[in-house]
Image (cartoon, rainbow, N blue to C red; front, side, top):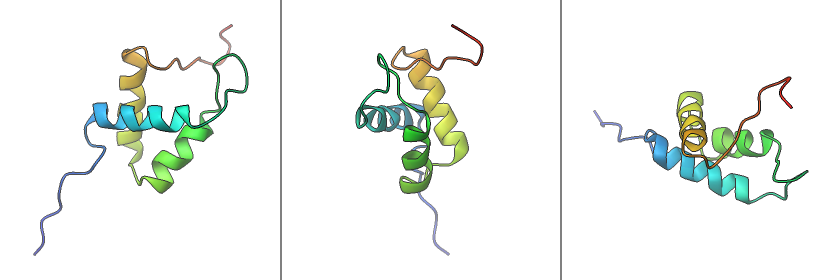
Length: 75
Protein backbone atom coordinates (compact mmCIF):
# COMPACT_ATOMS: atom_id res chain seq x y z
CA UNK A 1 0.00 0.00 0.00
CA UNK A 2 1.29 3.43 -0.89
CA UNK A 3 0.60 6.42 1.37
CA UNK A 4 -0.70 9.51 -0.29
CA UNK A 5 1.39 12.59 0.49
CA UNK A 6 0.15 16.03 1.39
CA UNK A 7 -1.62 17.85 -1.38
CA UNK A 8 0.33 20.85 -2.69
CA UNK A 9 -2.51 23.33 -2.03
CA UNK A 10 -3.85 21.96 1.25
CA UNK A 11 -2.23 24.99 2.94
CA UNK A 12 -4.41 28.07 2.21
CA UNK A 13 -1.29 30.28 2.17
CA UNK A 14 0.28 28.22 -0.63
CA UNK A 15 -2.99 28.12 -2.54
CA UNK A 16 -3.39 31.91 -2.17
CA UNK A 17 0.13 32.52 -3.47
CA UNK A 18 -0.53 30.30 -6.49
CA UNK A 19 -3.83 32.10 -7.13
CA UNK A 20 -1.93 35.38 -7.10
CA UNK A 21 0.56 34.00 -9.64
CA UNK A 22 -2.36 33.18 -11.93
CA UNK A 23 -3.96 36.59 -11.32
CA UNK A 24 -0.75 38.43 -12.24
CA UNK A 25 -0.45 36.48 -15.50
CA UNK A 26 -3.37 38.34 -17.13
CA UNK A 27 -3.94 41.87 -18.29
CA UNK A 28 -6.72 43.58 -16.31
CA UNK A 29 -9.95 44.18 -18.24
CA UNK A 30 -10.62 47.42 -16.37
CA UNK A 31 -8.80 49.23 -13.60
CA UNK A 32 -7.21 46.30 -11.78
CA UNK A 33 -10.02 43.84 -12.59
CA UNK A 34 -9.66 40.39 -14.09
CA UNK A 35 -12.22 37.73 -14.85
CA UNK A 36 -12.42 35.11 -12.08
CA UNK A 37 -12.37 32.43 -14.78
CA UNK A 38 -8.76 33.42 -15.49
CA UNK A 39 -7.94 32.12 -12.01
CA UNK A 40 -10.50 29.29 -11.71
CA UNK A 41 -9.50 27.27 -14.73
CA UNK A 42 -5.73 27.05 -14.24
CA UNK A 43 -6.02 26.47 -10.50
CA UNK A 44 -8.65 23.73 -10.74
CA UNK A 45 -7.80 22.01 -14.01
CA UNK A 46 -4.08 22.58 -14.57
CA UNK A 47 -2.82 22.68 -10.98
CA UNK A 48 -5.40 20.06 -9.93
CA UNK A 49 -6.45 21.88 -6.74
CA UNK A 50 -9.71 20.71 -5.23
CA UNK A 51 -12.60 23.18 -5.04
CA UNK A 52 -12.14 23.33 -1.25
CA UNK A 53 -8.42 24.12 -1.60
CA UNK A 54 -9.17 26.75 -4.23
CA UNK A 55 -11.86 28.37 -2.09
CA UNK A 56 -9.66 28.38 1.03
CA UNK A 57 -6.84 29.97 -0.96
CA UNK A 58 -9.17 32.58 -2.44
CA UNK A 59 -10.56 33.44 0.99
CA UNK A 60 -7.02 33.71 2.38
CA UNK A 61 -5.97 36.06 -0.44
CA UNK A 62 -9.05 38.22 0.22
CA UNK A 63 -8.45 38.28 3.99
CA UNK A 64 -4.83 39.35 3.40
CA UNK A 65 -6.00 42.19 1.15
CA UNK A 66 -4.28 40.75 -1.91
CA UNK A 67 -7.56 40.43 -3.84
CA UNK A 68 -11.03 41.88 -3.74
CA UNK A 69 -14.01 39.79 -4.71
CA UNK A 70 -16.93 42.11 -5.42
CA UNK A 71 -20.38 40.71 -4.75
CA UNK A 72 -23.14 41.02 -7.35
CA UNK A 73 -25.11 44.23 -6.99
CA UNK A 74 -22.32 46.14 -5.27
CA UNK A 75 -20.98 49.28 -6.85
